[in-house]
Length: 126
Image (tube, rainbow, N blue to C red):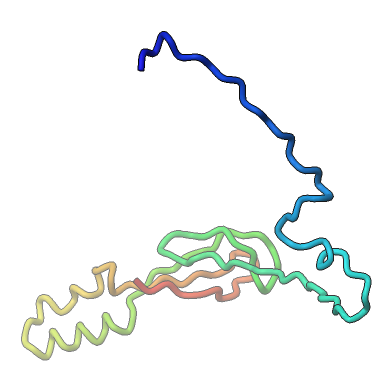
C-alpha cells in the first residue's frame, strides 16, 4: 500500500442512545422502587481517632485528661531489661562491662507526660 494514495473514507456515526434507554449498571426498577417491601438502612458515622505514635522525641497530640493540644514532655530512663542484663553480665564475671546496658539506646524507655496537667500518656520501648 502506498501511503500517498490512501483515501479517507467518511465514517457512519450513530448517536448514542438517550439516557432513558441506556441500561446502566442497575436496572431502573431497582433504583426507583415504590413498593414498601424494601427496608431502609440507616448509616451512623463513626468518629475514628488516630493516636500518635510515641517515640524517642516529643509528640504533638491532644491530652486525654485536660483536652489541650500539647507537645509531650519526655523522660528517658533505663528499662527493667537493662537492670537484668547488668546483673547477668556481672554474674558472668565481666564487672567492667556490666554498666554498658545503661548507656545503650535499645535498653532505654521513654515516658511521655502532659506539660499542662502532668498526666502519664504512655511509654515508648525500642
